[in-house]
Amino acid sequence: MLGDVRGLLIDESALKGLLRDIRMRMGSGAEAMLYHFGFEAGLEWAEYIIRETERIGAREKLEKISIAADVFRALGYGVIEEIKAFSEEPPYMEVKVSGNIECALGAETGERRPYSHFIRGTLAGFASKLFGRKMFAEETRCIVRGDPHCEFIIKERRT
Image 1 (cartoon, rainbow, N blue to C red):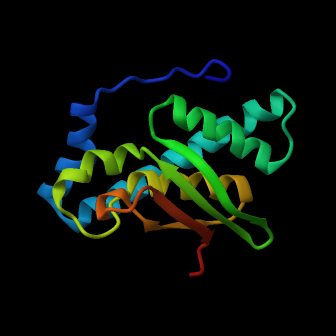
Image 2: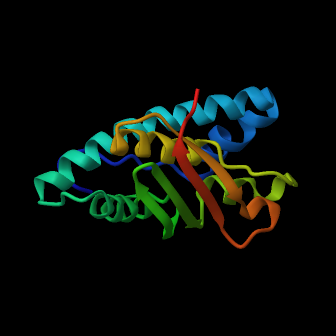
């Protein structure tokens, strides 16, 4: 970790209850809730990453994203394999993630649609803070559907 922020360990069985089983109890409402929880977590996480990366001299957005990707992996969320596309204006990213913990936990559910809502929200919240604009993430590939990895398109939210 960077700086003095504590990391929290939570085992997969507890995380499964938070990210998978709640969907069974609450349906699509849980998916929206998970996205918004992730979004708020992503905002906070980005604030921390931006502060700490600037403290160590990283100024460019891609440098900050690279360091954030290392932290994302260290926290066990998954591996950001590639930033497939990146633009500051208009703000846009395409992100390839392998080992997405949320989707790995949901792989046995039989779902046939994109499954990642918490991680998707986290990426959108992070990008919102990084770009200073409200961003939205869409999962376009998902291991739950049988894709080899998850992919997200993150772009400015148009209201």
